Length: 177
Length: 354
Image 1: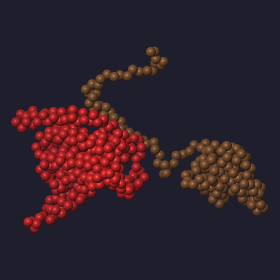
Image 2: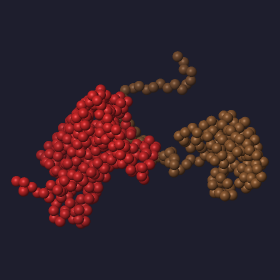
Image 3: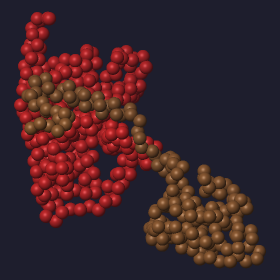
Image 4: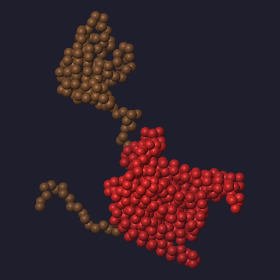
């Protein structure tokens, strides 16, 4: 039969010579290969001590942003919840009362803002949908947990630290974005 | 009669035995660590590095874990033999250390303390006798578990050890032609004065090495614990520290057989490229004895590394290949080696120099 490609190769099956039967050369070869591997660089990263850098486009855990004066940017417009394909975001809006101008940027704010991290698919549509630059995806990921309830992140977990009272934590949470 | 017993002598030997046993246990402990580390670096991994720096506390953690585990004795096993098995394996593994000369001697204010538990004039024979007892631990363990896989593995292991012992003995005979003595101490002293025995007996050493692999049940001859064929081998039903004893016995065996190989073929405690006698006169006998001990230890470590290196390189033999290698290749080779050596020794002793 004619072969379809010319890549077929006839296997050689000639009997081994006495020298080959002794396997001394093959064993030495194999031993030298394994010995050479001892000095090779190990690709493993020592994880807890050393973390692998994420790429700048990595979409990780969500962060609710504040402006430079430490006021929450979110106005609870619900566009993120609408954009979310996994329906992971829920929120409750509230009106800003007089005297709360230093807490919330606009007249309306999110009293409750929850993301279910088990539903979230980290697509980043919420970030795209947000007109106020109030939510973005950071370069960290959700740590493991023992109960499902703990994966519903509220404002406590999501909100970025205040840049005025805690600038270091703010810078750390903000990262390179 | 009792009053004539030299209590100092007994005390000295007891201390020596305790020290040697604890050293061989510690070495065996760190062999388990080294095995994992060597396996890791050969496979481009990092190996244990969590417990302590470089993971050196790993064997302690492993031992602790084994002690904590539930001890299961199968209902249908023979309980007495089941318990005796691992103990016997451990005992036979440790007993060989009695005749190995670990170093020359300490000179404590004119009192000479030889660093060898017993310098018996049939040392090599003793080693062989004890090593062949190693089959009992395996066989009893496999039999007492009342498990077909265990029994099969035990039978395999026993037949393997017995067949390789033949080639091992024959390869040693040609060495004994040259040394003319069965005492390990004398063999070492001869190598100190002349050249190491490996130069005279490279083939003999090679056969001995292969047989030592088989005796220790190490890959490529670890048929008695071939996971893919026999689940876990003869210690399948074992758990907790009894399993630990079996695994440990393998490492002790490796340590002792490395020591025997170094002693027989590579000059034992002799420090290479140094005239030990003159060094002893110049720097004191005690320092020399310590350095000689280290010299032997380094040789042993090299052998142990070789054992591990081979384990992570060469695949396991099939059973018929194993038997073929033992009976059809190694034994005839050892016989030929013996004949040639005997011929040459006879030649030389008749004064026909060449």
